[in-house]
Image 1 (cartoon, rainbow, N blue to C red):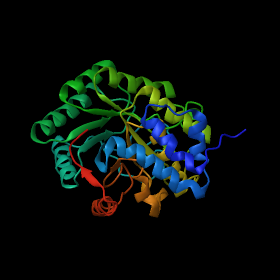
Image 2 (cartoon, one colour):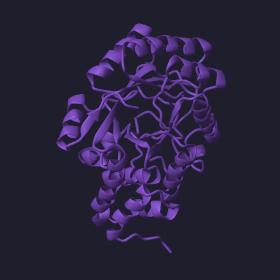
Image 3 (cartoon, one colour):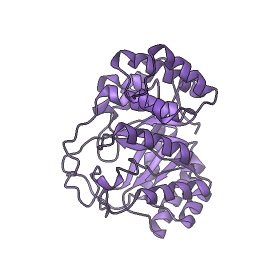
Image 4 (cartoon, one colour):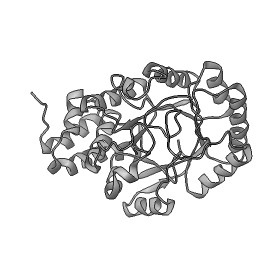
Length: 332
């Protein structure tokens, strides 16, 4: 029998979560399956949790694609994958000077966290040195928090990045363990978990999230949220598949704005104290309902993504201001 929560009980459940109650998988499923006439009550309840821990603050993150394409992995969603035929820019590492200019741009966009991202399976020693050189200078000259996303990590590389001042390391689980083999074959779900653990053990704040809309069931979407809770990820990016032409998932359209809102609310209920970030694909999937997403999430990416364009920063600033929220520029 399907678990059902009455409209008047969403706020009660939120208060229980704030009090320390960990919701069950059945309750999380009920969020995803709530009827449209309860959607605003669900979002209001999610906001009660979000505002308890983050008030009206919104954290902005900016990405720089420091190495594009040329990746040997076969991830079906990714335009930089070896199996992708998407017409993207492909280049080796940006110079340190270009990465430093990116940090200046992050500050202009009012971002508090600067994300240095590179395609590929795992970084080489030389690539780690290149990143460290840029990170150390950024840390010495700005108040930016630094997040890196460089692929799989070994213990030595994780320790060196931590010593250089990298605050966060992003390595998304992407999808559920059960669904993973349908998305990629060149690495495993366990490989991704291992890198998140290594970053955490090195003293780097773990950032790990999901890409929704890749064939996962409701139950699998819930499983992702609970896996991230078990990993104790501090920051959880919620991506919504932007099915880029030329990738294996080209043309897939499983999401609609209301589904995206329920996914964000579910993630907030399951991980109440964590940074929930609306990430890639928000513009094309949430569309006109983007502002409502911030009633559950407390962070967004500002500007472009890795190979796709994002909303103009001024539009994001206006959206935040119109909601009566405030941009948080420096706190991790």
